Image (cartoon, rainbow, N blue to C red; front, top):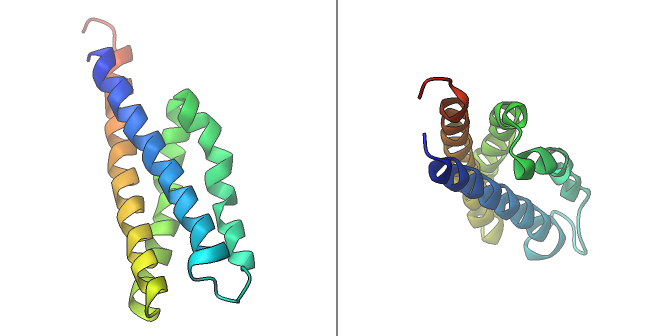
Length: 121
């Protein structure tokens, strides 16, 4: 595997993770909070913030762990996409799309990283 494909996979996953963090914070503080003035639901980004350093530094274990964690955000986005109305519904579908895209990018990154460290290739 080329280092270019590993770098591209890692960069895509990192960009999607940061976009998901930004979306969740903006959603719960300004765009469509559950309560006016912001919501404690903003704390849902803490797990994403905890894995961000590992993703940004390219630790394969963190990528693997994140594929399980991101399913919670996919689920929340899907549930709120069907249950909420208005702006919140569109933000929920955005969260679902970002979570799904991140999942695919993280799997792609893990496959590229694993292939890059195999001896004999």
